[in-house]
Image: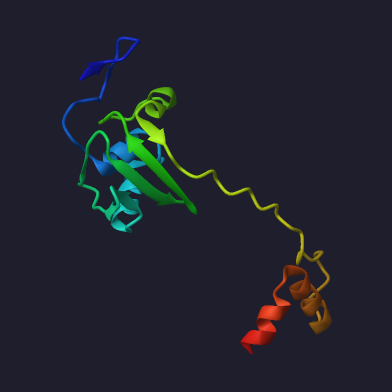
Length: 141
């Protein structure tokens, strides 16, 4: 194991590391079980191929992870076996991910005051028109 700057040992090494363990150790997922679940669901690709959790990653591999509606594309620079702090984890990969989409502001459209009861047909159509659903309903039916 390698010595970190503060004298503690980190789980770095020269041999290959499991992809689920590496994704977790560089903090792309919160838990190792989330990383394994993402692999089983086919949300993890190494060099363009879907991989199982036990797949070995090596320095220079490109890892793609789809999670929470966002795709992370990272290039492996350093292999880590154990979870490390965020500053050390950020040095273990090069992030080539596209910027996250802007947050959609939560619209208050369709929120009714408590106690008003069930919306009338006219109220429902007005809410659908504001949401932009009116055209899709007419063409679907």
